[in-house]
Image (cartoon, rainbow, N blue to C red; front, side, top):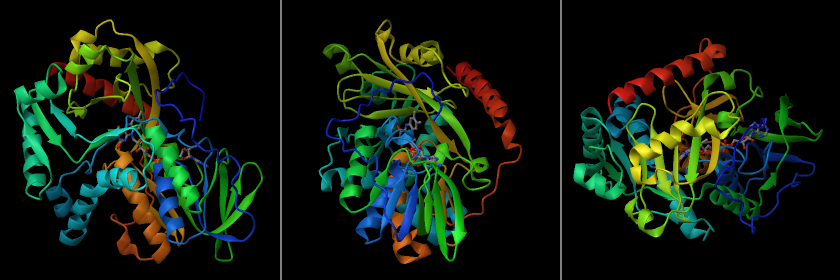
Length: 427
Ligand SMILES: Cc1cc2nc3c(=O)[nH]c(=O)nc-3n(C[C@H](O)[C@H](O)[C@H](O)COP(=O)(O)OP(=O)(O)OC[C@H]3O[C@@H](n4cnc5c(N)ncnc54)[C@H](O)[C@@H]3O)c2cc1C
């Protein structure tokens, strides 16, 4: 990853094990997983438990990608609501996708509970805060669709949202009690620990540079010279996808998500902000999301510039958003500023590819991969173990590079500027 100014709030716990040199020796493996984020580690955990021999390789340290940098909001669902999924994918696949989408937060919290993971978390819900009447109508429709399926959700009016968030400017919203918030770096490292305990080998600082086919197996060449052979390879590189599989990087638009964290807030101030401990994302085109951390800071994030940040001023737009929502925080110290990459696809859905038998890739978290990739990794492991395509919630699609991908940076920057202006007009 290129060097840039970035100082995350999440710290590696002292108990986190080191995985530096766990490279499998000799023989052909069942699966090599490229990428040691939530997707790769969840796949590795469940594949190892299904009896497969598995090696995870990450170009950096475990948790150095988006998985250890994110906002830790565990939000069930996809960007689309149940009725859209059924209309778009047909009754059978659509219903399966709705059930999958509903289960993604459980995938995280069940694991934390069942495996007694050392992960700070709260599970008191996620609020989608509406800033316009149009957004509130969309929230009401979402509420109707999920409530009719028995989900623990609720539409919030102006008074309720003001009380639950303590924020200015929202006219209502939607509470999804299936959701919650975690410390994402602890979660990723704990996933790695239990995957390793289940038998998966995990190696850090092992960048995969080449894949080749050899007599029914895939050869995986690592930058430092080693080579592994496997029946299957899963590329779990998401927004950090490089040129390993031709065309794959051109199927996504990697965007930067920036975050800030205040100093721990005085008790009285902390009590007036998100008193119930919910996480929030709002309905703006360029959305703002926030939550409190276990040590009482407000953590707030949103889109950031496409080029690498170089100084604290690159986060100034988030400091302005913080004070707009919480005027009482004017003048509070911002102690941490950091960023990471999220992968968007043109249809806002994750994409699964298998361009040749055993060569698999998953990209496109849409900035919501904590629950999604946890659940998808389990399904991917099941597919690896059985070869049964019905285990996967999404169909495989061909690798289709986005036209004029090389110009995406200019296009995205222009779109973001335009959306920011529209959001400002709606204030
Ligand atoms: C700032 C920020 C805030 C976010 N907030 C939230 C949130 O609150 N809630 C939510 O659900 N989602 C959030 N997301 C999205 C979420 O973090 C991601 O969807 C999720 O972590 C993706 O996991 P992953 O395992 O697919 O990818 P990553 O965790 O990014 O892992 C990919 C890994 O692949 C490795 N890699 C790449 N190329 C190679 C190679 N050639 N060889 C070896 N290794 C390679 C990289 O080093 C990296 O570690 C956020 C993301 C960011 C950046």
